[in-house]
Amino acid sequence: EAIKVTRALKIPYLWIDSLCIIQDDPEDWRREAARMGQVFSNAYCTIAATSAAASNEGFLTPKLNSALSATLKTPEGGLLHISEFMENCNRDLESAPLNTRGWVMQERALSRRTLHFTKTQVYWECGNGLHCERLFKLSNILVSPQSALFADSDFPKAILKYYKGGRITLFQNLYEKYSRLNFSYTSDRPVAILGLEKHLSSVLQTRGESGVFEQYLARSLLWSRPENIFLNSITFQDDYHVPSWSWMAYEGPITYANIPFDEVEWSTDCLLRSGEETGTNSKRTVLKAVARDLKLDKLDMHDRVKIDEGSGFELSNLRGVVLGKDKKQKSRVQVYYVLLVTLSEDEPEQAKVYVRVGVAWLLEHNIAMDGEDVVIY
Image (cartoon, rainbow, N blue to C red; front, top):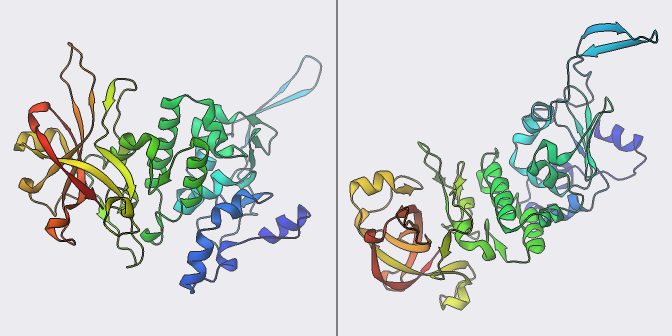
């Protein structure tokens, strides 16, 4: 059916991931997966089998038509047919089976033009809006700011329309949405968004890696699990490393801390560095930070601390990296935004290598003044 559509468009070339990538060859898959951003951003058009739950369902199926609810005569003697309003983008696109899959977010965002074959009609998505088969046109921004970003034919240039706060909110919303999508193999989580991340970091003119942006490092690190849900760390191949401070290292949804803009003094205690810059002789990207002792009781742990996985650490071994603190105001208590870390069990203790275990919103009396330089893998 994809071939039928391609021929009807008079285009002689078609790329289908499952056929063009050798599925049982890890080397070919790894090489091609890294290029997927280029494939979709340079394609003339992307065909999306949006309504299909599996590859064998097809998408050129009869559409669900709305029954006419009324037919009226106009004063001029013509007929006016009234039917249910069917342009439901959330139902047809955002909640469709295809768009619950992790790989698809990048494919949709980087595509210049997309033909969505849904259960009700065909949608054409591009930088000029969302055009419906029934000749209705929707502005991307009216659907949602994310839809405007997805439809940007030169993704993600549309993000430059926003000031700093708006840019941060957009990429955080993108990553929160991505963290809720499904994967057949959870180890694909950091790979399926590589192209999107490269485009974002290029337009934002900052280093982007493992789900964080250097220019917005503190806010990038202040992600956490939702209430009542613990994350599970993903097992990767030995030669592939995802840092513990990246949400890409875990399976499960994340949310970013809702911190007001221009009301926080951000710290310089935490920096993004290559392993060589920290003297660890590692090719990994790491955090170089100042870790401080913490004074926490059970009430603090319940109200002010979010642990990622719920186990695997001793309370007495927790250290905190202060990422920022509220600007002093007489009307409220000053809150410190803290990355929680503990010594890595995989490295010698004298190396002072730590790993992330969560985040916290603490008060001044919870944090020791003195700290030590550490590396966070």
